[in-house]
Image (cartoon, rainbow, N blue to C red; front, side, top):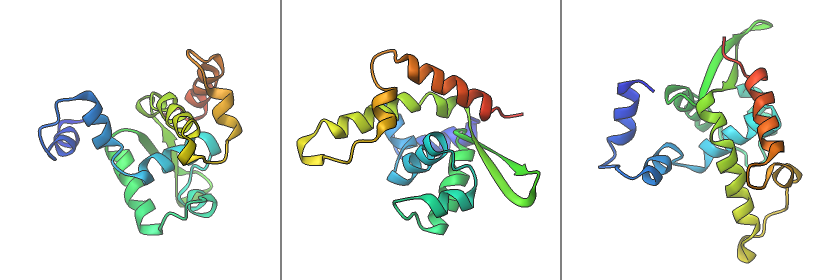
Length: 148
C-alpha cells in the first residue's frame, strides 16, 4: 500500500490498534460483500457482480467499492482480452489473507441465535483451525487470480 493510500485510510483519526485499522479498511458491508462475491462465487467483472449479487448493491456503490479495493491493494484490475471496456478483478495476496477472517465472520454469525442466517455450504467446508480445505482454496485462488 503506498504512502498516500495508507495515510488516507488512517487520516480518519488516530488509529493505533490493529483491530481498529482492520475496521477502517473493511469499513462497510459492501467491501466485504464484493470480496465475497469475487472470492467465493467467482464473480470477477463489474457486470457479473452486479447481476449476481443477492444484496442488490447499487451500481454507483459497486463502482466506488471496486475502485477503493484496487486503491488499497485488495484487488487488481486488468483489461479483459475479449472485451476492451471490461475489467477483470483479481484478489491480491493482501485480500487472500482476509478470506479466513471472512469465513470466521460468517461462522460467528451462524453461532448467534438471534442472527441465524441460512447456513452456506462453503463456510462449513472452509472452517476449522488450520483448515486444509481453506489452504487449498487459497492456493487455487492464488493461481486463478495471479496478477501478471
